[in-house]
Length: 372
Image (cartoon, rainbow, N blue to C red; front, side, top):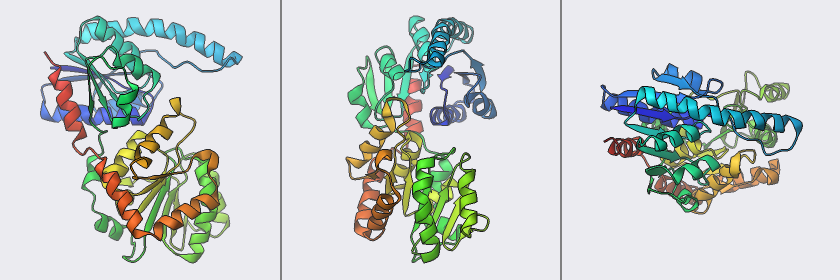
C-alpha cells in the first residue's frame, strides 16, 4: 500500500499530516508513505525528521497587491505553477500511490490536481472553519473531503462526501492530567492558572496588551499566569526584566520566550488566551479549556476569525478582535471569567463537546477506504 501526502507551509498543516501518517505506519508497517512539500518551508525539516520519504516541488501563493515587488513575485508564482504540475506528475508517476492526501498549503493544489487527472483516488483535509482558495477548488475534484469543524462544510462545493473528523491532537496532551500538571508547575489548589501565548513566533499586539496585566498580577498575586512572548518577542523579556522580573519570574507570574512543555501548561490551565489557529483550537477543545481568542487578522481569508467564531457561537470561547484589543478590555474579560466559576465551567464543557478525540483514526480510515 502506497500513500502520498501533500502538505506544507506551516506546522499547522504539517504536524496533523505527520500524526496521521505515523498512525498508519504503526498500524500497517509494510505501507510506503511519501510526503511532497517545498524545499523552503517547515516541511523540509519536519518530514525527514519524522522518518518519511520527502520530495519537493516549486510552488508559492499569489500576493494581492500591485506593488512592483508583488507583481514580480506573482510572475514567478505563475511560472512555478506551470512547473509544479510537471514536477507533481513525475513524482506521482514514479511513486505510483494508491491514494493521494492533501493536508493544506499551496503544495496540495498541483499534487492533487495531477492525481485526479491520473485517476488516483484523492482526499483532502481542511483544518479551518473558513476554507482557503486552494481547498475550495480541490473540494470540487477530490473523492472525499474531511473538515476539522462542521462550519467549514457550508463553504465547500464538494464533489464527494464531507466528513467532520476534527484535527489530530498530540498524544501526550491527551494523556495529560490536570492535577499532576499543576503539581509539576507548583500551582497551589486554591489559585487559578492562566496560560497565554501568541504562537511559536509570538504576537506583538498580544504581548503589548498583556504587559500591564502581567505586571499588575506579579504584584497582587491574584492568580498564577504563564505567558510566552514567542521567539520574536525578546524585547518584551527585556521589558519585564526592567520591572523586576528575574529570569522571567516575579511573584505568581512567569514569562517565557517559548513554551516547550505545552502539554503540562495547557492541561494545568484554568483559562487559555491566544490566537485561533486550527491546531491550538483542537487542543483547547480536546482538554475542554475555556479560552479568550484573539484571532490573527493577517492570515488568508481571515480564517482565524471564523475558527474562533465556531467556538464563540457555541458558547465555547470568548473573542476579542485584534482591532479592539486593549489591555483594559482583555483584563476586564479575564477578570470577569475568573470571578464566574459557573460560566467558566460551562464554556469549558461546550469546548469539550466540539472535540473529536479519535481524529487520526477517522482520517486514516477514510484514507484507507480509498485504496483500491
